[in-house]
Image (tube, rainbow over all chains, first blue to last red):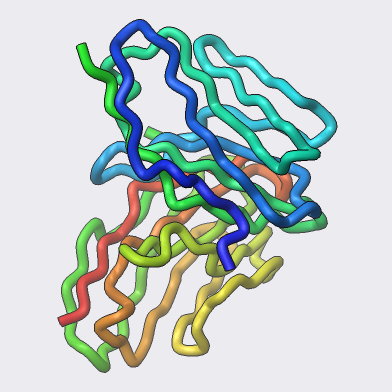
Length: 113
Length: 112
């Protein structure tokens, strides 16, 4: 049972344009969502998070949007840079004394010069 | 560099064997998490420790066990290894239970 889904295995975007990565979830109990970036041979690197009490969070070029009614979140990267090429994972958790992150399968983002 | 260290980086062993993976959390972090990333399953939560005590369990096999020591480093023990245990094993740490998790570089386990 895939509780967190990233339906696009890959995405290719021109340098300087906007990259939009999408994530859907099924468990309405999730109240905390994160995006991680992963380069080959490295561990996931935390990018940005959002609590279920918000619908938007920004950090520099990265913005995460949360639509609770649609159980959907997205990560916007503007402008996209070659160094953004990586695999992006969305993750979700229910914070009740523990934080068991449930990850999506990942989307491979390629930024073309 | 997240500040989380994992050793060894690579491990090759045979079926039926037992291995120990080690994780040192970031300075000041009390909580340690273990995840498994296999080709067909993605990143799966295994177990969490907080200040030496087990806090949460995921889909961790009975052949697997973990502990967190007084100096806060953690070890994941995998026994009676099977081919399907070949995967990347990541450790993450956070200051408190609900804080952001920072991941180590992982240990790649290959079971032949």
